[in-house]
Image 1 (cartoon, rainbow, N blue to C red):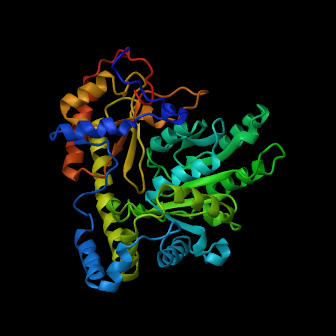
Image 2: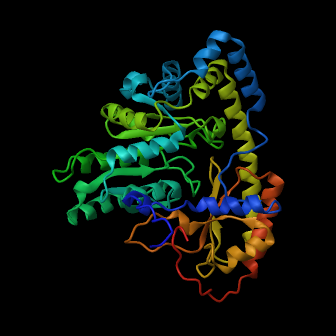
Image 3: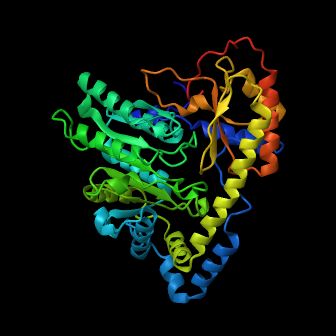
Length: 444
């Protein structure tokens, strides 16, 4: 008999769960201090609210009564005063009263970053084999989560104005013709300065997307309401023009849209706190599931963030960040224009906020992790996110191999300019003959 222990028998969900590709990319950056990272979607180090946080935290802990409350457990639902403040914040962002939104503070749940709410909502709504519709491309961390849940992912094309409503309608009609409309449970959109493209869903398309979802939810073959999962993580990092209304703004009955926002991008990811405004009949199921996770998100963070909003420190910091990221975006776009204009067929997005630019190269220039370009970039000292990771596992579509996500979040403007110059040198070094790299798995 062998002395080796028998292996654990993993759950089906565990066997469907793969390591996120960003883990490898971040390890490369950490292991090589001379590598300029245009890959990780981290936020700007120099503008993190260290003095503001120190002042707020110190004031809280110097008050014995307040300190004891903040250091105690909170509730699964989240700090009531913070939820009321966030409701007023959402009213201000959309320019409409909570009454017209058919929303109360009880419809808001505080979560451990908006990522936790993505996980919990998926757990509550999705069974293996259910269909979730995402943009093409989309936020790869969430499409990875959907794979783990056993969901079938179907994708809708985007253009410079975001998700194309007519394409969404066509896809739902196709799914209905296939006899699977009853499996469609959710439409996911990262609709402000999207991760990975930086594109924003235009104002005129927002009510159209909602109307399409309402129409197909009412179809007799649908199993019930289809939910729009509106991931607005980058909403407050709009630094050019006015941010459009949320899709939730148009959902006056609060029936179809779950709106997710976060403190991570507009304030600090270290507090790991997000929030969701949910359809009312989803609040209890989500709280029950979230209670199994944590009995409530970080209570100390919630108290500190409440004070940041009440004192004006939060709004002041958001304004600073908009200026910081606008200058970094400008540095990246200028560097791309200077270094990539001569690359025939190369083009890139021009985001009005957020952290990302999406670069498309000639079709013969593959960008995958095992491609000659990626390896040459490592030698040049620059790293990016291969675009192939960003396309959901839609078995009906072919993943483009010539795109990449570039982040201007964490690197300085000087590093961004140098990083783009290194990237351009790597691109120009690639033979014009199509490389032999085959289509890569999203997680290869």
